[in-house]
Each structure stands twice: as structure tokens, then as C-alpha cells.
Image (cartoon, rainbow, N blue to C red; front, side, top):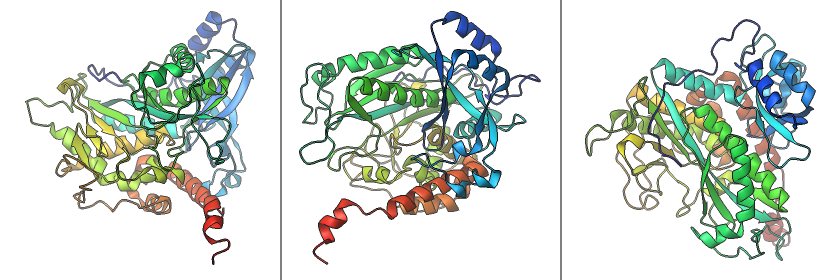
Length: 485
């Protein structure tokens, strides 16, 4: 990714709109200009992102788009109370408690784009949900991130950042053992049977697919950058250009996942965003690079003298360490997420921090002081980027506000020296998904970071999903116990 260098002062996405205008700030000029420039587009995908990062919405015809910019579009409030399978979770309070009534969705400003390779041609626009009188709907993850951006702005600080996208490309047919297997190269059918980390040949084999991804990203206004072959057969990573608007950085990740998934489908393979599809191979992360600028655009994490870290950088790391346990359900939201955390896996197993060290949870990358940032590494690619960024910014604010000492830096192999030197107010890290759910439910920090309503919604959905998994008997139970106990 491109490192941060210039940081213009951020602007709130939730500022007051002129009377009668969209509460999101979207304008008629934007949609009218777009429709004029794209007479070929016949339909549009309306995409609202739920707590699991799943795009929910509709596909509308061309003539329906302009009215949405004028008066919004009604959507049921329960759309934000769905589990990963799209089923209602009554405990969110968003279903029958509210009579499954409608809220009003409005376009996210600047999110109207043309989609590549669609036939007939389609466009896409992101949505956020509002009450009928124009207030942000408080279970919408994008609004929670906007609230953290605004809270920092009130303190004279403006976050910038970018996400990294790791994923697997899998064959549609299962292997001889009935399990998923890496997809063969789309160029020549070469099998992906070995770990070929940083292999250029492995990338060339997927050249037609990645060419489509880059073209689609460019058409959507997303600056997708470096692609690498990652540390497992069939695993790849795409990096994104650093954004001075963290909301746009999260939008980029949401959209890029959709682009990758669609391109893979067109080539007859599966783009897999599970955190750990193979038990004996590396999992897929969603590292979040973040920095802060002051009102003059200066990076406040940058050191002013050689060898002396910025106090704000250290306090930010301290806050992230102190709040990581509370937020682990955000960073690892699914049952499969927790299979990613194991020693020597390139996934962190403690709240450790270090410089130029990929065995820690919070990495300060090497490079020029002007590009100083924190790489937050705990999140899996299955996490919701809006919620991840929300929890990270709230953790940074907590550290700055309380001037939290991050403790000693981890050097060398962080897996050999799992740190216990977390701030004294920190709880122990949850050991599994169930523990993370209970910690999240009880967490004052997470409730304040997400807001009361989103906290209730998110933890209720995760509890319902846990219950679904807990009552499902896996194959391993039959293998171990069917005829032995």
C-alpha cells in the first residue's frame, strides 16, 4: 500500500444537510451527472452493509435511482438484525419489537459507480440507514465508524488508513477427500498444490482473473495496488491505497471483496473469505493500517527526533492493547475466525506490539517518519471493516485520553515471548468464540465504541450464531465417538 504522507483535515460525513436534502449529504447533482455520463446503464445494485459485512439490498431499474436521491428508499429495519444466513435475530430488538417497520436508506455520497463486466450494464451505490425523520439509524455499522471519526475530529485529529485483503481462490469441485481444494491456475490449469509465497509464477497463472479485478476496481474508483501470492496454496493478498478518509477506506474493502468474488465466479472458481479454510495452512487476515493527522495535516504518530517514538503513537498502542480483549469479537466474529489464532501462523496470539515485526498484534512498520502508522493485525478477513475501524479508532482514543503506556516492545519471535505486560486494567484475552461473546456483552468500552443499539444488535447476532453452531454435530464427533463410547 502507499504509505501516508499528506493528511488534509478530515470532514464529518454526518454534518447537517440543508433542509429537505439527503441527511447523508448525497446530492441530486451527483446522480444527474452520473446518469448523463452513463446512458448505457440499465440497473443499479443498492448495497447496505450489515453487522457481518454482508451486502443487503436490491437491484433497481434506472428510472428508480433519481427518486432515491430525492427522498431515500424504504427498507425494513430488520435488515440490520440478520444473522450470517440472513435469518431474523429477534433478540436484536429490530424485528417484531418494532413491528418490522421501515426505515429510510439514503445513498452514501460519492459511492455511485459503474460496475465492470455486467450484461446488461449495471451500476452500484452504497446505502446507509436513517430513521424516517433523518437521524442516523444507530445499528448501522457505517454510522458507528462515522461517529468515531467525528469524535476524533472534535479533538483536532483526523484518521487515515487502508486495509489489506487476504483470500483464497478455491476450486468449485471438492478434492478426493471431500474437502475444499485450491483452484488451479485459470491461465493454463496448473495446480496450486504447494505454498508458493511471493511466487510471481503463481500470480501469472491467475493473470486473467487479476486483470479483471484491477479493471473493475479502477472503474469503481478503488486504487487496488500490490498483489502477492501468500503463505498457503491458493492464497493471495491485495493491498489498497492509503486513504485520508477512513470511511472511504472501509468502503474500498467492502467493494473490493464484492469485485473479487464476482470475478472469481466468472472464472468458475470460489473467492473464499473465511478466516481459516484449511486447518494446517495459514489463515487470512485483514490488517488495518492507521495513522492520525492534526488540523494542519501533520502525522502526529511521526517522531520528531531519531530514535524517540511519538508519545501519541505510544499512547495509541497502549489504548489498543488495553481494549483488544474487549473488541476481539469484532476482530474475530465467527466460529471459524478462532481457528486462525495459533503459534507460528502469522496471526497474533497476544496483545504484543513491536517494530518491523510480523509476530506481534500491533506492528509499527519500518519506513520514513512521515509515514509512521500502526498496523493492526488481529482481524480476520471475515470481519466487518466498518466495525474493525470503529473499535480501532475507539481504542486509540482511549489510549490518547488516558495516556496509556503500551509496555515494553516485543523483539524477536513474539510467539516465543507471549506478552503478559498488558495495561493493568485489561482483561485477559478471550480463549475462544464463546468467551469473546461474553466479554463483548459485558464490555463498557465496546458498548461506548459501537453505541448502545449497535452493541446490542451485534452481540445478539453473535449469540444466535453461536447457538446455531453449538447445536450442530460436526463430522469429527462421529469419527471419534460413534462406535467408541
